[in-house]
Image (tube, rainbow, N blue to C red; front, side):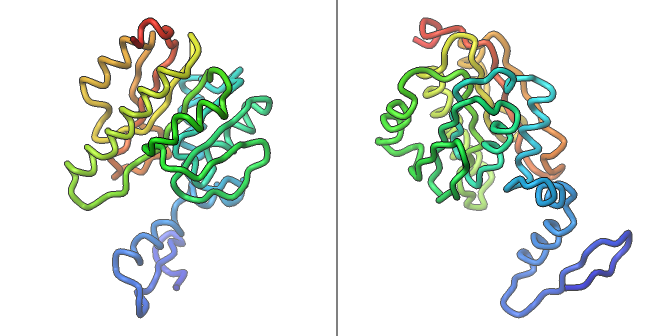
Length: 224
């Protein structure tokens, strides 16, 4: 590894056993100000700042009491919720293992598994006022396929959110390619008073990710 380059930029030499793609990823990580800031401020990932920036714009964390974090790994979003709404109850699920977070109930389980909704409902024991989803499908390198796989997760998250949210609740989820498709937007607008798309500054410029923020859940009747 070298520390040369213009403006103090860290450059990584391609070493034996490391592909050029891995080298570029490592170099990007080492020079990413959000990665450096996350390490300095104790967040598990740079993604924490996406939630912070979205909340600064839309204000969905204030007063949150029961929060579901779908795709919680590695835990950065849950950390933000804990800091912003310290009294909130937080329940998280992820296919990947997640190191414990104080005050957060976590299960290692695929959200798309048949057992997931039952576990989450049992853990909730009632309703939630905020459902967060930073889930994205593992990419296969085919943009259209990757988009469809991730949007399937978003659709499943919306359906579940409409089952568990209390009136007035909010739903925040990662979507791709400029936002949710028209069918999903129609569903969200039917169920929520406000539906907005946003790309927080912490999202990398070259990334196709956007976020959908739906607020003011209308209640079970609208979801039926």
